[in-house]
Image (cartoon, rainbow, N blue to C red; front, side):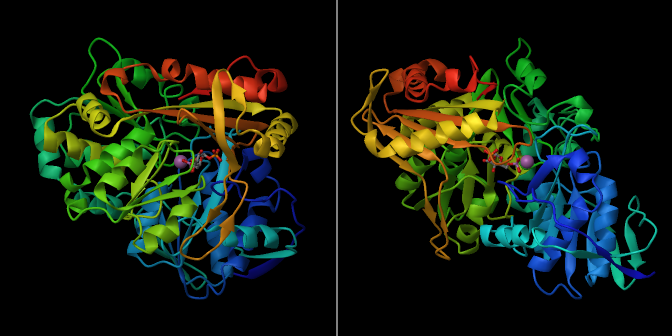
Length: 543
Ligand code: VG1
Ligand code: CO
């Protein structure tokens, strides 16, 4: 099998975003496009000779083609072994788990997460380091820098490696080991949660619906919920992974998981509902006629963590991304543990988790996880909630309302303006950025700004600084408004507005979030004039 060095020229758009490189499938299909990026990764991560690489993806269109390309390149670059999920499948949290368990050098995960798939949809690639977590910023910068000057990549001429059966094969000097994508992950889950208690819950007639959205979590959810926990067949819906996710948008939120939401809010609602995204790292939690915001979910899990065997010794700290509500901070304060506020993106949690400064982490974007892996983990969150429900005998709504009564409620909403004009969105943010100093004291829709800044983060472990991570405004009544541009979209720009207000009085915690935040929503309109500037009457997604 001859080794080949192929001459290439750089593409100018290979800067990784919030979570790896995401582009339209058509972009990835250009000759040398994927190869350039993969070689840039291999060139940036150092000496890979004889090392182990983990490889898998969410099964979307182009997954298998990309896997074969990467296998050939890994062999040509001197890797000793690649662990690849059967059929080229690995969810993001499972890939993180496999990297850690098998002490791999790192892993490549093929996914565009919650973005739609199919020939006209999106594709993506991200590199995870040896701790199982996303490449830190310094490394993604190095990969990007390399991609801008790359002039050759290495591959071998070989036929496709069969991936549909477990076992080993050889690709030049490299071993390809096809592993069960679910096994290591399922074992880790059973070590963290009380499967007997949850199993008993199902035996007693507890009803649940898990929507895998035709994406990667189907096989994981069937194994864990239906096989190991004994939930009735049919608990997992849309469990068959499809390359185009059945034409849907595998994003577990109130807009895109509509059928699940309707069932949970309908007349014969089950006790519990949950959904995950394309690559299995997100989660949405629903009770009977009740939606749990991801920010509240993190806070409730933290407050009750010791009920789960894996966290019985308590938490070392809690970390949340900046736009996530401050509900988790209130729990950290009561527990007397550290609370951390990081920029958006899971890569910023890695150092805190490695250093033992945080046990639980969360983002408002339906991401929650702990130090068991170094990614957010959708099914983990679902199992954690099941464990709490089993241990307390309470309903989802009861747990959340009791939490609010004890800690106060952080009313929270996120408004997304998707696929707006990129130049207009950047101009809007820039204009506001230059006004930040002048805002304190000014009034918008009756609310007075008390402080405003552009969020910058200094990593407490390695001292690295990340600037320009989102505009924050505080108001005198304790309200908070955050504005930032998405780093994961592939068409135009997405403007995200995050709004919250604290309500300690339990007699006033029963409002609808949009109602409770109406003033702040109006203040944001007045402040930014965004409807006119973006030419939109309303957000595309309200969470
Ligand atoms: C979004 C979320 C962010 C999350 C990222 C990756 O990023 O806001 O919290 O970490 O997606 O999640 P952005 O830049 O579009 O706001 V996943 O599940 O798409 O890997
Ligand atoms: Co995801």
